[in-house]
Image 1 (cartoon, one colour):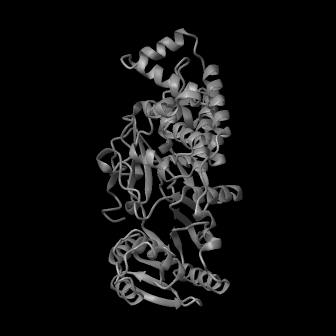
Image 2: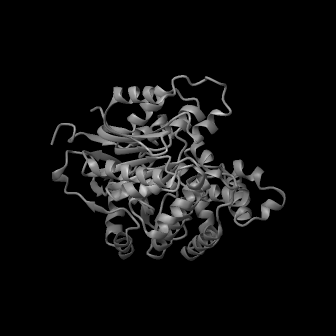
Image 3: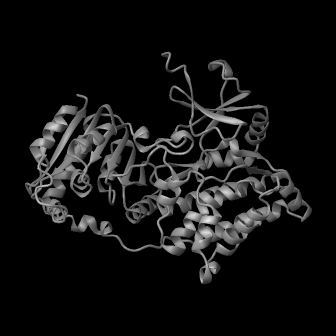
Amino acid sequence: MTAADLRIRPEPGSFRDPANRVFHLGEQVLRGLGPQGTADWQALAASGFFAALLAEGKVCATSAVDPATLPDTGWTTVLRHERIPFVSHPYEWSFGMLRDAALLHLEILGRALEAGFTVKDGSAYNLQWRGAMPVFIDIGSFTPLTEGEPWAGYRQFCQTLLYPLLLQAHLGVDFQPWLRARVDGITPDQLRPLFRGVRRLLPGVPTHVHLHGAMQARHAEASSSAVAAQLRDAGYSRQLALATVRRLARLVRRLDRRGGGSHWVDYPRTCGYTTADRAAKESFVEAAVAAGGSTRLALDLGANDGRYARIAARHAAQVVAVEQDPAVVDALYRALRAEGDRRILPLVMDLADPSPGGGWRGVERAGFAARAHADVVLALAVVHHLAIGHNVPLPEVVDQLVGYARPGGRLVVEFVDPQDPMARRLLANKPAGIFPDYRRDEFTRLLSAHCRIERQQDLPSGTRTLYQAVVGG
């Protein structure tokens, strides 16, 4: 091991629970536990319900580590977790993804309650993805249940999972910008003004928005232990907690995405590719992804219906398919989930405004650029949308695309000539001559400054060119 491999690196997003902390050691993902966390882990590891969740893949693979194999960490116990292929954030998920994550969270909580345990947290950030399959990662939040204690994570669950779902299902409002704005999610005070009049009676709103908000206001000055004592005195029990979880699960299952149509849903049909163009493009992409041998991570930027992400998945361990339209991502996710896909992770993101760093000091939730170090980057029919549609200077577009690949990684990019019908459609609403440098020869020059171009191919239509390049080559 190198000195860097032996250096412990705390995970910036893991600091809110003093009883345990996630850190990295080389490629290992580890969790340090204090004395109380150790006792909770020992009880959890001996339980049947947790072993079943592990076997079903619903919680991340976890095992204790021999301390003698590690540098001194200062923790009582250290656990090793599986490494999630690509860490994403809830504001990058589609409606169906957020709903399935919420349902898994409730299932795990229900099974924990039945076994005499609970989970301290209820945050959407406690879930990640193996392709289109959600997985619970916050092993440190499991703790033995104290009879009569309410679920401490209920507020987090509402703010980061339930409220965004209600916003989309009842009002047709995309939740992603709301979640991106606040790491702690949407508060009852923010949501209540939107659910007045007859909207107050929509499913889930009376209890989980208005009553919850009123109870929070009523007990704002009371300690959590005092509130718990009041609930115990009122007869609150594990059975009542289980009934609440089951009602929440029924509510979440009934919610579905509401929203207007999107022209991007029909893009594969309206984009203007001829049959020959499409066949040539698919052949080029497949050869490019396969060219470098082992590929751990591929990015498909502007993935739309996932056609090229699926091609990349034949040769890559994990593909992250990024698309700006939530409706398109949701349709792709539902198809992948129905197939049981574990290789393609669809995400909602506008490449002209990619996810920034957020939370405490701007690093608690890493920005997309900090997470994207791909072996292969597909940027097909993207450049013209950024350069013409969003007025991003062409050198900046090239810099961004190259920056998503690791040194030595491959970039597969498509340049759309100004005379292409799609480019002309974008240029129609722009002043004449505004983009004098948007030319194929200039794009080739810029790409060559960052990469070694291995292959270049014009599609049969003559207005689109594909490049296969090695970053830093």
